[in-house]
Structures are given as C-alpha cells and as structure tokens.
Length: 149
Image (cartoon, rainbow, N blue to C red; front, side, top):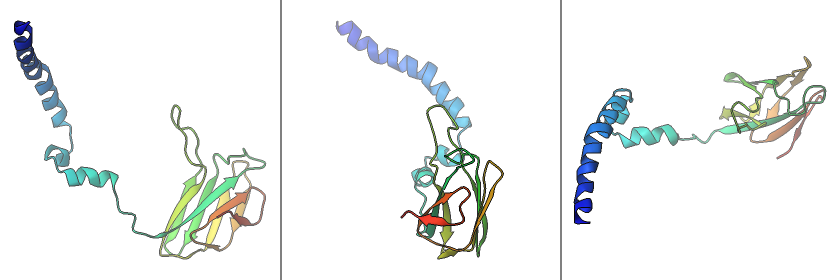
C-alpha cells in the first residue's frame, strides 16, 4: 500500500513532463501576447467593457404579411451621428437564438431622425422622429410605432 502511494507522485510528474508541458508549449505559441504575459486586466477587459452610459432605443418589428417574428427584416436608424443597421435573425446555431428586439445605441442623441424597415415581404415602413430610451413595437403595414415601455 505504501508503494502505491509513493508511486503516484512519480507517475504524475512523468505525465506532466511528457504530456502536459509539451501541450502547453504548443498551445502557448498560438495565444495572443497579452495572455502569454498573463495580463489579467487585459483578459478581463475583453469581458467587462464599460458601457459609457449613453441612450438607447429598442425596436420590436412584428410581421403580418412576412413571418410574425420579422426574421429577415432590415432596420435602418438615422441620428445626427449617421446611420445604423440591424437585421433580425433567429437560430444561428444548435439550441440557440437571438432576441427579436433590435437594440440601437444612440450616445447622447435624445431623438432618432428616422427609422426605415425593409420587411421580408418587400414592403417598406418609414417612420419619423422617435424618442430615445424607449421600446417601440412596429407592425408591418402600420404607419406608426407603439411605445411598449
């Protein structure tokens, strides 16, 4: 029994030296430099980006002639800073999905100049000014956006 207990560390050392170290060396060659230097702040920076506190607008398109979830609809939003585009997607991978609500960051803009939606059916919806920090429901064929929150 004492022999088995004393053999375990040697086996682990052999495994580490012959398998794990070469594998780590090979993987290490393909890592970005900030991971090689073990810069934890750089690694965490990938996951914790500051939000900046700007305003947003959310749009939930609902199809009537097109599919109800408006998958394939293209939304273009105009502010003083320029145009932003979003396209409604669903199910891009196994057992996954995306929110059907489209989010636009507005920065300091308190109003949106225009919102254009190209529906999968070919229909177009053009809306005028909308207030920031709201969620709008836009129904295909409608001429207005309904504030839902």
